Length: 210
Figure 1 (spheres, rainbow, N blue to C red):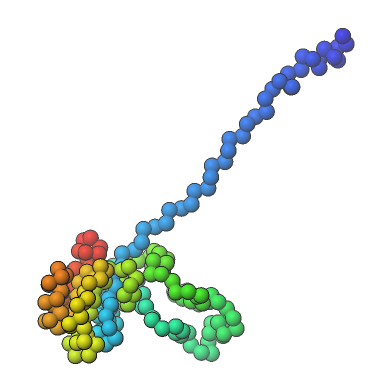
Figure 2 (figure 1 turned 30 degrees about the horizontal axis):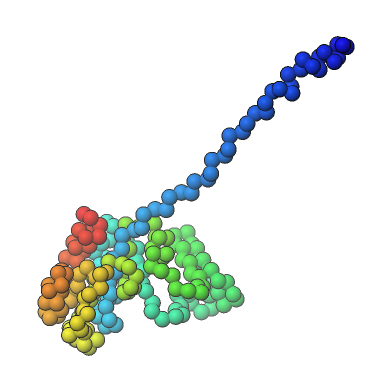
């Protein structure tokens, strides 16, 4: 046997197993943050939703909460931009998602082919302590329902057998004694519609767990 053949026979390269690479771990997506607490103010047109919502935002801000807000607009098409402005021209030209950005503020609006669920909207609001909502009667949000004396639409509802039956309604704000009686009968607290401080005490206890 030649020396070269002997060297080949004794070579260990054919019996050495190839190194096995460990499988790469599957990518782990970041956990989605918990939804921000929210409270909605619902009621018929003329019941004072906007007036009370603004007072609640002011009062919670005084208590050093970072407050976000959502206004539910029940009709299609609304304008938040000014005709003739550059960003308005972008949208008119066909932009389906327009952002206006400045050193201290950013605004974004986009075209939709279906109405977003409340949960889809609020999950993007991660920089606030609480979201105050005007409207969204069926949005799955804990709600305070408003009734105002002198509003014909509220007067018509006093004898409604289904009044305050929604599982989302957790309290009422009113200046109508008969509504307070209905709320008491159904185990719901009632508040003076103009007493934002007392309502915020309730929000802190019931929604924020303070």
